[in-house]
Image 1: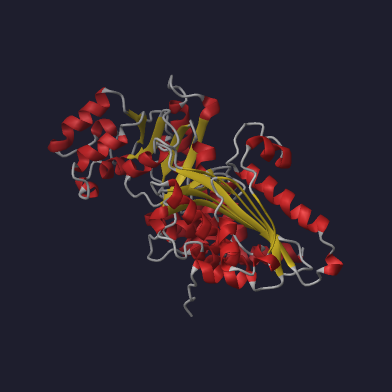
Image 2 (image 1 turned 90 degrees about the horizontal axis):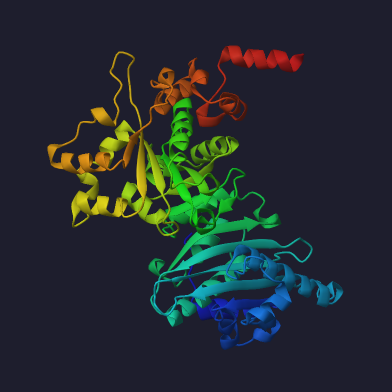
Length: 482
């Protein structure tokens, strides 16, 4: 059944008229608009315990503590605000006097567009809330990037989204995916981007934040999300700012020895570059939305299978909606002007020079490569040998349309394309699609194609449709009897 979307005023009034919802609002920076919506509709006295704006940094520091890095629009600042404000509610209100009230603390810290309009603005928004007065509270917090060109418009949008968050947490229960969608009620997608979200607490015990990250892309709320080895969502700006970024794109279904060798050898080559600092290196395994849809609709379990393996190998995963490489590099350029690297096989190099990917650009392939190399970028090309009897293909043997040959020669001459020469020749015939087929068909030999421990993980968790064939099942039964 489709959810009815209420206006912002209707949502605020419905919250105000619920006598069991009671809490505080703390807004610092430019995010001063949320609580105003609740005051404007009336009946706020039963909902708003306190509304405050610690706009001055000295006052903010006196209340929430000083930030060591001097930044105030951060996740750490938001969490301190929620801790402090929710703690005050519990401290100052005697639960025996309010046995049915569900407490909440809403907070945001926001910087809107600057005077020169070069900085569009961003912020953090979150809420700590109860759905049952006898249970521990839950947290929902997220990061926003603002797109509008006027500070007043951005502030109005922040106010609407804040109301959506509070209303959704109390009225869209047991459905975090619908709660996520509701954040954009009465807001056009182009006005605001949510590029990181996190759910935690007793009401969200079964929520996988990696899946919620995927939903951000599927719902058009952002084009890229990142999560780390522990499976936790990471703010892209926090990870990528002023870093040397090295990225490998693939299906990783499953990750193979070839994938790991590509990354290992590329890291060795990349870190030898004079402009690359090892302590600023960020390595990403990128899976595009197109790769996740390789068999039609996205299979959530298949997505989590890939993520589980990559995370178990200590890797950071990027999920993106950037099929074209120039869009991926443009995305990275938001955060860093340092040298970057793209890892690709010869097949990907063919796609890079395929004109069909650039038909939507007025300047075609030249415009795309202008964007691609407006940053300090280098391509690391891993050789290809589909069959043992085939010659090994490198960028030097690369066949390209005569129209693009001068462009290719220019890049090679300027050392923007580099062959990986320290590869392992024994593994060139390993392909993820073949390994996946063997796993699903119960064939043998796929274990030797994978990095250490990955085969055991696939067996133990029955990933990628793995099911033990008769001999393996009998062996498991015998060992359990012993």
